[in-house]
Image (cartoon, rainbow, N blue to C red):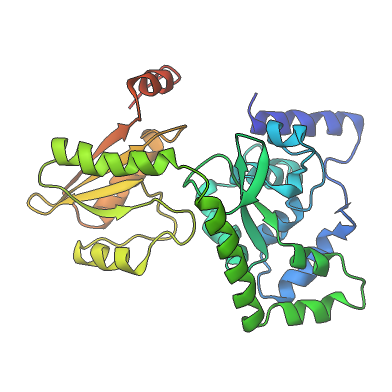
Length: 314
């Protein structure tokens, strides 16, 4: 069973017993306190309230290896974990929050340092700062310690703490520290996904896609488009919106005005029907004549392993 199925089963069991699915507070913090604090720092939306509340959850981690080491959900939860907690446990639905929506309900919080990015090292089951491997299922999030202090502060203190915490100079210091910690992790973690992305455009595209040039590479986990990438996209006549589900590599053939998508897969993320439909709509919106698709794998063994799991491989 996947985490969504587990959450649905858990919710049904609680309902049958007449028990609460989600407690009124986690670690002494109610959802009302979360809402009040987010209002002070100008980040108060329903999604962000529920996301922060989920990251207070102190039950065992949903990562099995992390749970064995005594970690809790609040020590590091993936986008899928958070989306499931919000969509299925808190709201009682059957679907988790859409992953692509993270730019609306996670990014505004990590941009000011309220949420930190962490990575579960599969070698030892320990959470480390940063997201050294793009699109990894081990990429997770947790609330920053100083933000937790505000949430857990006494009634007569939290507001003043929040007002001081949100000051620009304080934000710069927090983000600089988080960046330094993330860099230290990146320097110790080898990214197989990054290597495959590089091989996909340097070897595969050069050999099999003559006439195409790379106009976008998604090999990060923060801001999706750098200023340099934006200049290339503008020259190519392509505009990426925040809701677009972008591939690892996007190429353009200027002669026939067509695009090509490459998804580099080390664990999951093949070109599927959803990706095809969304990228065809993307090409049409940007006035491109056609769009093609390729999924690349690091080895034939990995390709066979992944394709055998797909009922209708693309």
